[in-house]
Length: 112
Ligand code: SF4
Image (cartoon, rainbow, N blue to C red; front, side, top):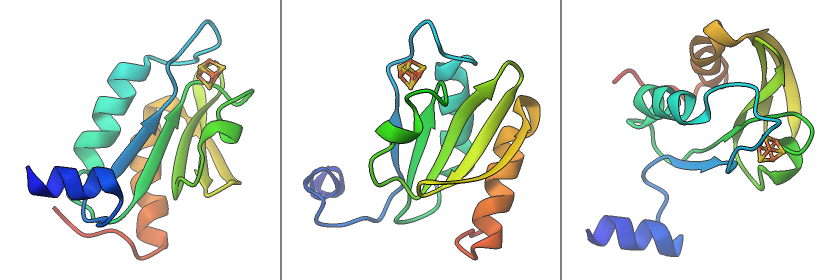
């Protein structure tokens, strides 16, 4: 409980924070499902902020200061971002695994 409050106040960044767009007609994948998968894969990490955005039109501009972004690129593809920089486009089916690989390549991954 206290943890959650401190986290909300931004006093501690012990858990992963997630940002997701509200989704709309432009959303290129099942946002709830993907957010759930991303959360499951990364929630044991510490101090990261990960954004899941439905489309590349407005997503990157609305990711605020996220460390990583998972953004709908085109039908069947997503793009991974490190901060505001687009790193790579991958098939949606490989999105979560590639996100993990990106975090690993930055040495910010810890095995669960
Ligand atoms: S980021 Fe794209 S998909 Fe998400 S709400 Fe904004 S316009 Fe819609």
